[in-house]
Length: 354
Image 1 (spheres, one colour):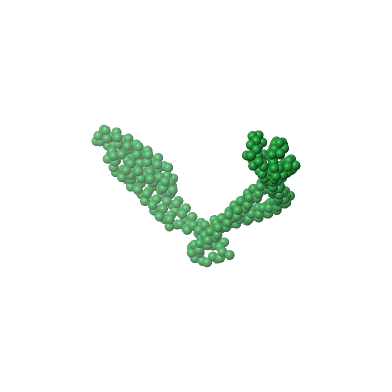
Image 2: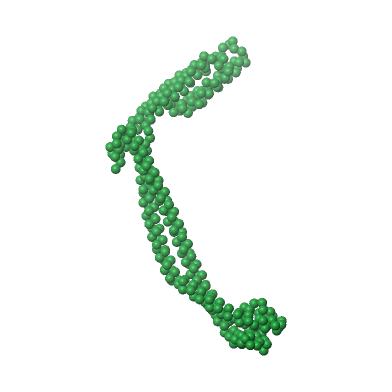
């Protein structure tokens, strides 16, 4: 039997069972109405009954109040019961009336109370009997249609998500390509090489000058000249680079005190320092410009990288979501197979799901 036909057969059985359950409900609702009608008649009789004259006056007053409360409360509860379902809701309340009447009311109207209690108990028995029969009219719930609907919705979601994933991956490819183009446009690698070469050249020049200045520290110390320049040079030879005018002025005054290799070094510095320092300043300015260019280029590239990273995260989230949907679909397929097996047992036939 094909699944479509099997489902129709199942729905047919469900409808038949539902009709029988509704019929049973109507049947018992009529019984409930009839029984409540009888109890209400007994209540009316009890309400009209006079308390015997031979009863003590104090007991008589209490019994009268208890009777009025009992009749009004029970009547109000019973009139709220319109059928068997309402009976189920009010049974806990009705059960209180078995013991909820007053002591004196029972003494004075014992027979009436027992009669009413007997009918109240029959209502409880009636409801239990109804539930037992209702349970026998139960068809196993096999949610094949619901499972198929959910599977259909999940398949649509997977299709939508996979298309979106393709779009995101295409965007990623485009952005990666654009990032490579930007790298070439910004000539970042070339900038980095130029900065590296310039830094190396500057470092070499500064080391050479500082080395030559350092050679003069010993004769300067021996001269015991207390000038500020002498103190600064002894402390840090870089002073000659940062303050070339003051250093050369000092060096010219000291020149006659240098001999041999020290004099040659001093003469080299007098002849070349200004030119070397000017070159260092020029190259430092060039280095600063190159580093600013690199900073701007890097900033734009880093922003692009952040966007690519966000896109990768979206792709990962989408892939994980699709994975969860497919897992859910697989679970539903297994659940569907089990439900079909249950339907086969119910209908006593083999079902073709293809």
